[in-house]
Image 1 (cartoon, helix red, strand yellow):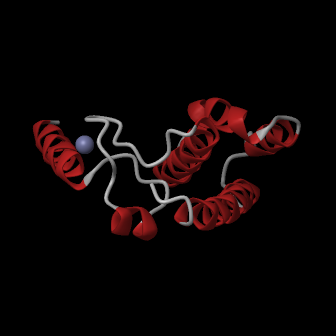
Image 2 (spheres, rainbow, N blue to C red):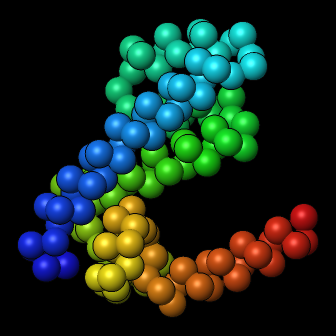
Amino acid sequence: MPQSLTPRLRAQLLEEVQQQRAAIYQYLQHGPQAQYSDLLLKLESHPLSHWPELLSQWLTPELEAKTRRLEAIQAALSQMDMGLYGLCCDCDSRIERHLLVQDPARQRCAHCEQSYQDKEHHRNRLN
Ligand SMILES: [Zn+2]
């Protein structure tokens, strides 16, 4: 990963964390379930890294998508901190630069992403 690109992607990720956080908040505030107000209070008192766990038992499909995205962004940010950013989680090779520009939270190279999608597709068809 060229050093020059990482700070830019990092800034993007940090911004998106805030957006996802706001989106989850908004969703819960307007959500149908009364229990959400307890959940909101809990979220307010915990750091973002605990959110996916706190949200796990409340997931609607929409909330699950937001939570997964939040998790992916946080994973990418901590990989940056550890100097492991931009490596494919399946084969350890470098993720293509243009793909990271498209989606800074991406976890797989083009090849592995394709086989992952194929497997998911297959699994969904079986279910
Ligand atoms: Zn790969």
